[in-house]
Picture 1 (cartoon, rainbow, N blue to C red):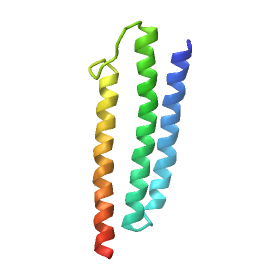
Picture 2 (picture 1 turned 180 degrees about the vertical axis):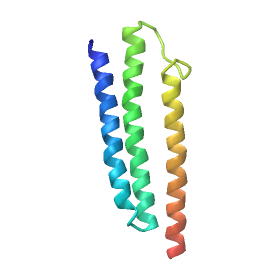
Picture 3 (picture 1 turned 30 degrees about the vertical axis):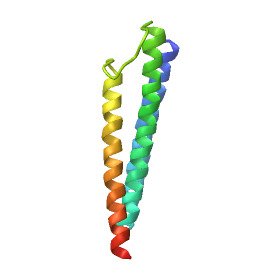
Picture 4 (picture 1 turned 90 degrees about the vertical axis):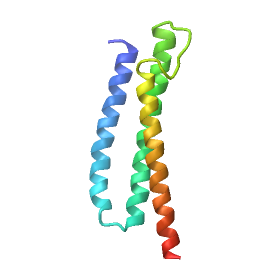
Length: 108
């Protein structure tokens, strides 16, 4: 098993572990108010985005160095999917931040 296979396995294990921890924390968050829940969900999404960004960097390195391609684009297999997922997360974070702002305005 080469370095990148081990690296991918480590990242995947970290993601699975984080899901378990975040799942338990989400149960605890149910006791919080709506603002707390939104903040928690934003934090979860940002954590997921960080992990995807790590995978994106690893995939980019793999394409350029291991596969010896000269360029990487949004259409590169493996890259495209990660970029789409990051875009989706960005949209969801914005929606939750807007909801949080509406709650804050309603409280004022």
